[in-house]
Image (cartoon, rainbow, N blue to C red; front, side):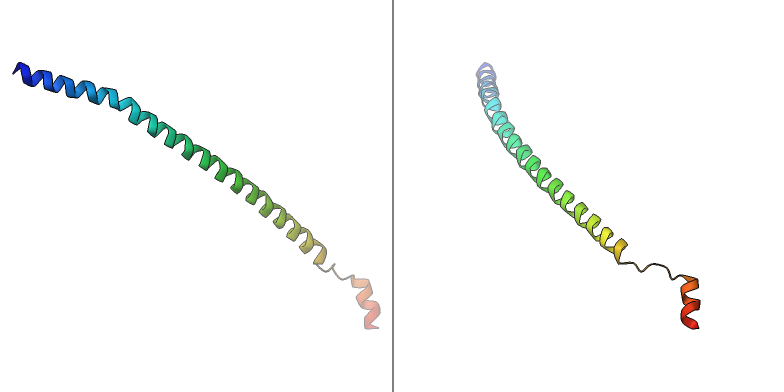
Length: 80
């Protein structure tokens, strides 16, 4: 029984020593993922700003392209 306990204790100590190394690798992977997401977020923000500018330009074009309302007095002059 004592031998079994020592073997289990040794396994637990070794696992405990290896766990921080695995956690560090995971932390590095998470930092890389966070940086990639931040870069993607930045690109999407730029694309959103470009699309907003395009919408504003289209709205400005549409506002200038609409025909002005007809003047009733001018229509009467044309009719005769």
